Amino acid sequence: MPGRLRNNGTPKDTRTDTSMHSITLRFLASHNEGTLVAGKVSGGTVLRWVDEAGFACATRWAQGPCVTALVSGARFARPILAGELVEVQARLAYTGTSSMGIAVEVYCGGMPGGDMQQVLHCATVYVAVDGNDRPRPIDTWTPETPGDMALAERVRAHINAARAA
Image 1: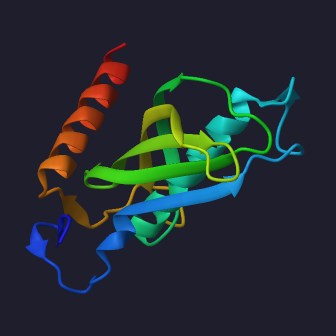
Image 2: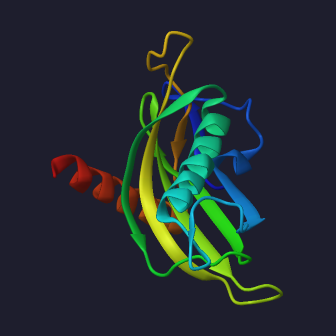
Image 3: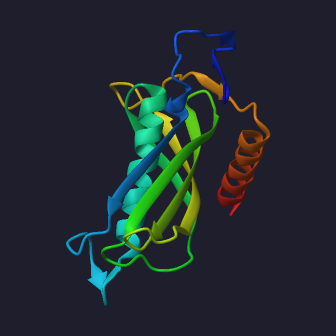
């Protein structure tokens, strides 16, 4: 089971769907999607996709409304072309009392059957909020696999560096 669920330090058995800690969005980059320059999707559109995937992952984990607190370190390896298959993966890396550190990666490739290449990765933070937009507590997710632990460490280091800058 990838990660242990806790609520305020107490084991919690009510969630059996541990897939709630990640989400993948897949779609074709449309000619109508965002601003195209020479058939390339704008960086702002790609960042919107990053926020949408991170937001979906966060709100699903928090089981309620969340707000974006930080998107950091987005580095574009290459442009995304209209007509390419796009995959945006968001994975919960760690949780705080009300916040979630989430790693987001964007891949794209030609259709049909083109190899998917990573075009962007970044670290994001979302905060669960109540009806008055005040932070509210969330369940804790503790990474247990070596891969999940390494991801949590990378995302924490990245976010701490961004906050120190």
